Amino acid sequence: EYMGAILIFCLMSRFLHTCNARISIINAHRLLITAVLLVSKVFFDRFYDNTYWSKIGGIGLSEMNLLEAAFLSIVNWRLQVTAREYWEAYVFVKNVAQSEPSSVLHLQECHARHLHH
View 1 (cartoon, rainbow, N blue to C red):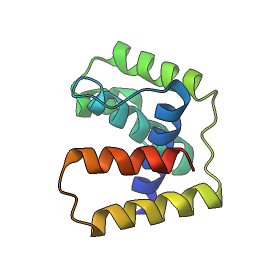
View 2: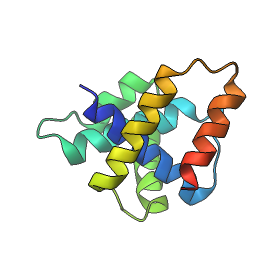
View 3: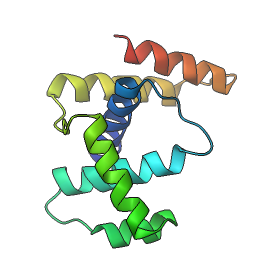
View 4: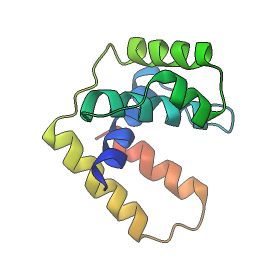
């Protein structure tokens, strides 16, 4: 199922764009696990609690709770994804997946262009 992955991409993009942050080796898995947690809570009828996601992410429950609160604050609690946002993200991810980038820099440039459209 691609829907969850695209929604996660949308929220991560919104977060990074809102706070003008970059993904690093230090924050990547925390950002991802937080976006997954939020997508599961908002878009799916059945979801796991923060204890589950903190165990999956290898972080403490208190940190997971703080990450969730910080993410929500940074995106101003805007978790809904419009049909247009979803479609644009889907096309972007599909195009990147089908291309053969020569370096990580290429992916970063694609991502930066996507955020500014």
